[in-house]
Amino acid sequence: MTKSSSKGSILVVEDEQAIADLVRAYLKRDGFGVVWARSGEQALEELTRHPVRLVVLDIGLPGIDGFEVCRRLRARTSVPILILSARDDEVDRVSGLEAGADDYVTKPFSPRELVARVKAILRRTGSGGESDDDGGPLVVGDVALDRAARTVTVAGEPVELTGREFDLLAALLSHPGVVLSRDRLLELVWGGEFPGGTRTVDVHVAQLRAKLGRAELIQTVRGAGYKVVP
Image (cartoon, rainbow, N blue to C red):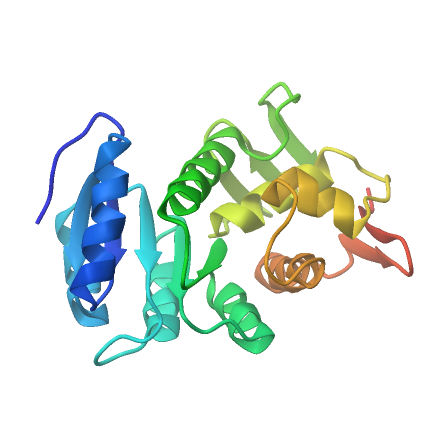
């Protein structure tokens, strides 16, 4: 079921109706349209029918679980994904990030905080990381990032990144040769506190290196953080 809105639509994937109704109510109150899917299979179908700006995804779903849904979504789209789950172990949070999620919220949760996180993700994925840059392209070696179009190419070939991966790469490429601490990157890309702490940064850097195929581009500076080597 959908409701049109000038803010666009959010896909909520949740099999518990009470939770889905709560999330939908707060999102709609803030001006978003909502598409509701009760299962992972339905979510994948709905994504082909409706343009959505973000996915709120439960893990404990009937049929294929949320981690697999996240991986399948990430394989076909760069739409931001926020996991909403009762699983609060670090291993689950890391698994969610490695599957391609942009944020992870545990149940029980504050619906106001959830909406705030949705809007924060949308702001970040719309700005390309840092707010004080000029929005122009960033090029280091054969890696080119276009902040306006939110595209990345390596040797002229497009590379699909998640919203967080894109913002992380933009933050690093904006400071070539400068060491950025994990805490600084967490602040720039995630807006400060995030479940998993600085481990979140390490996971995303590893994913960036793998997707770019340029392990030498992002250098680990032991005890300090990361830097892009021009």
